[in-house]
Length: 384
Image (cartoon, rainbow, N blue to C red; front, side, top):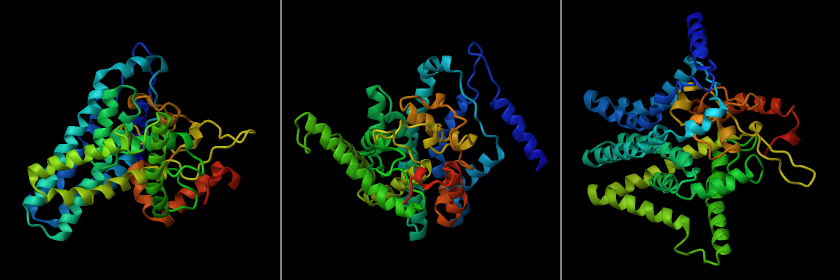
């Protein structure tokens, strides 16, 4: 234990060391490639299964996500360091960081194609097939995170790539619902994507998933109405996303045969579940106050749960610095900031997902944190 503490302090001293703007170097610059390459882990179980013929090895990718990454988050120091604000414009113009995100999508599609091909070409027990389908669903959640990162950007190429990433799991309504809905209503009872105190993740999913779809369609309907266009217009962006999903699935079927379709359809709800899991932990119980006019205050760092755990941030494009994302949605992942006042999760997202899946453990850990933030005043808590 003493050795581990010494290692953590040493790493932390490196990560949190301050540099002036003239000499600043992003110590994590090339580590962001972990986000790009993570989808390749999804095929590792197949390789180990072929070598060993042991069915348990198929769980390797899931073990990596839900056990290894939380363990590494525990081993390595948290990283609360921020880039100097004066160099952020220059940092965000570096093309390297864009290519780190761009390359993730073809790597993911290759991994998806590989697993689907294996499922089609091998006569596997149903249990083995189920594990592999669940695996591509879990790793498909990474493309939703990619779509989330790119969908907030101002240039058309990034936004179109976000649509393609989300279309691979038929989740194309997400950017409309998220950008114009969730970001507007976050940390309020009206937001279907903000979990309420006392609400377990399974109850939340029954509200969040249909709520997101309905909100997306209402937002798009209103946008089209302002242009005096009907909901079924060819300018409907949700229909565009569904058409793109149809194109992707048709391409898979044309190359691999019709058996690819049920596999792709079965992995869709598992992908959606990954986004639901993230939404659940990001704002649990947090509530924006209303001013004298009855309007909600602007979203502040205190309205999102954050995590500075190093490894999970490196594989999720800094998604866990969620407060800064809500304050400045167009800010790029490499420059998202830590705020000392932002409430902190006890571990990274992967570990928190596992905790959320066991509701009594989640409430034992998280409810006291929410109550402490609100000084035990339920008027300051978004609750059921």
